[in-house]
Image 1 (cartoon, rainbow, N blue to C red):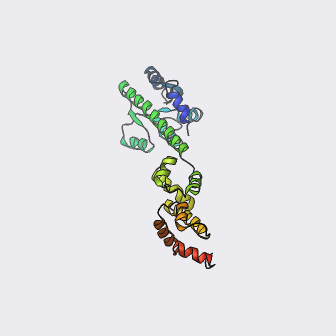
Image 2 (tube, rainbow, N blue to C red):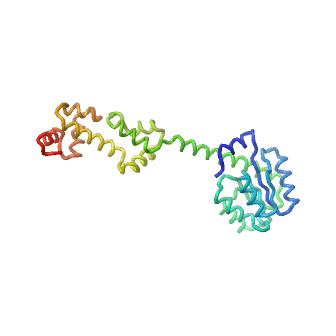
Image 3 (tube, rainbow, N blue to C red):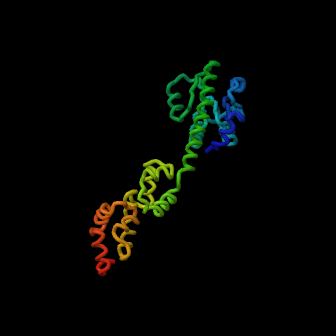
Length: 265
């Protein structure tokens, strides 16, 4: 995987997009290098290979951003190179030059996620247009990767979310919308985190925590049912009582009476 920040610095006007040219014909190789660097597109040819094995050697050493390859090279074909490169690098832009006007070759190129497939001899305007699009496409991919990384970096760890829930479950204003805003996460991510960490939905977790606290407080005589409802996050005593009975099978008063008589633990 390439470094998105390093790639971004190279292409951001300070650096250059690095290209690898691969063609077994020296005249074509030199012509491509001259044309690429004379277009002033911010592309620098950092290596030129005369066969597929050299392409792979240069790629491993330099991790270029743009590959301009002949489809038919000795020792290792352009498609074979691309298959290996794509297995580890989805960001680099790949431009294939082919002397074969056969749909089967184009199909193989598409299957290996080649970005551009040009037939030789390539017109200057056609190559220039493909190179311009290559620069834009590479920049877009790097920006997307940086955005994904920023999202991942700002996404909270599930543990911090669950800890927050355990610390604030008595807050009457605690709800999904508040948590989404608090942790800058989507509705689906919130529920995925809670379910994965606790095996419960968000409502189930908050309710269980509140009912557990309610049972502890009801085991004491000091607080009224209304006060206990408030301490557990319920502003409505009657709603609290309905939830409590649904969870335990007893009303708060029945539960307290049973505990105080020693009938309940």
